[in-house]
Length: 210
Image (cartoon, rainbow, N blue to C red; front, side, top):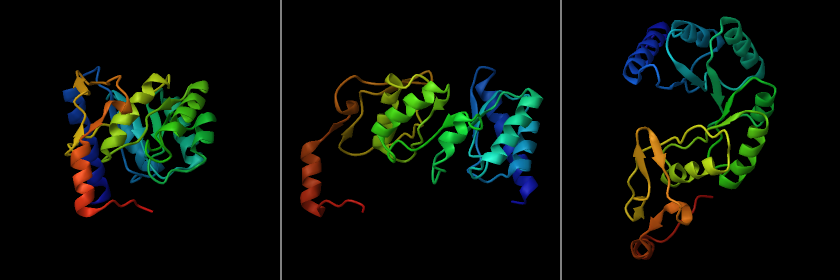
């Protein structure tokens, strides 16, 4: 679509979702690095009356641009959090967040991993920052990430993608009223059908990505 036509559609979609979510719903928008600074401001200005909670990946990480955006939001009195960190995220993002340019960190739960996230979450907590590990399309990570909430004070959300995998039992998890309930059993509460997995290995072997 032409740039402005697509942008107007983005704005209309957010407004439609906000009508469904109501005044208490937390609306989060993800630009997937498709905006620039000026376009980001256009979108946010058009959604001033919408209960936006955060803007995610507005553009490729840039400290100067985020400083500009944060100051612009502050002057307008528009309380929208800046979230970033998934994908090929800048290794300097944590430093920029500590300096006040970013509010929510979204490094992936699989890489750098759960143990790293426990350490990172503690560091972010110490600076009043928020944690929301990225995970989409990876069934194991979706369920593992919620367990961070027990260790990370400012844990925000589980990025949940409803996936069914044969031989992977996640019946200990359930979602009610927008909240995910997490089992206390070992192994992140995930049970694997060992017989099925063993037979699959016998049929096609076992491979790991390098």
